[in-house]
Length: 362
Image (cartoon, rainbow, N blue to C red; front, side):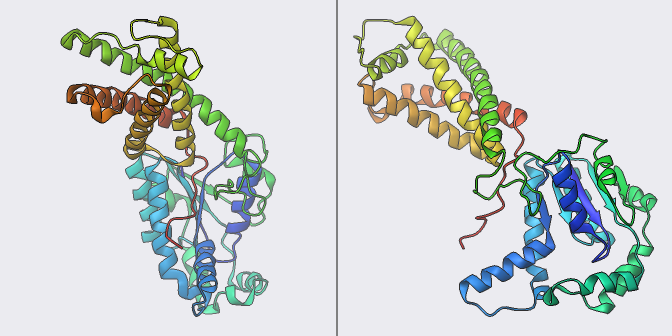
């Protein structure tokens, strides 16, 4: 889901956002212009560059917010957009992003507050975050022209209207009255998941659950790979390979000769490796490492794992010594495994731990 907050500066958007994410099961990543402005200013401070007024960072913050929104929507994660969104063009951009990703778009319409009330609230902000009076006047005017019906006409599937003093009941009603509990892995300050590489409440549980679903996806991938192997063998008449079994037994200190065919160990290595590396792929899906690029990388990981196990155990030789035909067959089957595993993992696991840090080299 793409959730767009709409309201004047000082109308309570950020307060509501924190309450929503803290009190409900929503785990939407937050894209906030205010947060991004502070982030950009903090980067200048850390680098020793001249520091500008906070509003001077707005153009760069808008560009960064646009990239993050498109990336999150493209991954199917959705997001909560925290900005005024009082211009139609700003709202339409989120509608288009949501539509392109096949996500529903909902709006939260903040209450229309008179200019004196906005000014009074603005005076409570830090001095460098205060909004000029003329800007607040424009905000108040533009908000007075909006209504829930107008936002629905623009294309929002649902429009939530917020009372002047939204309470716990108003927050939870936006999500169908679900039981108000803290979101797993929620940060106490922002209410968003701790996705920036810092372990937090629920992060381990989310990764464990993702790994479990990934293991299931890996078994599906093994089944697809096995079916492909049987089809290929019917055409090429290539015999069954017992290298996986010899590798497993060799790693366990029970090496066997090339003439032996340990059927049970072969299946244990075949399906066990698929489930183990599927668990890794499930964790990737939760962390936002998804789609074709992740599947391509996972193919390399699968090939590297197999060749490491086979060569360490002495059951196999380096791939460059194989006939070209054998190399092609091996890569093709492992690619099928990783592709199917990735498709299933991305379907079963939402990118709830997608990080928004480290997007540049600083």
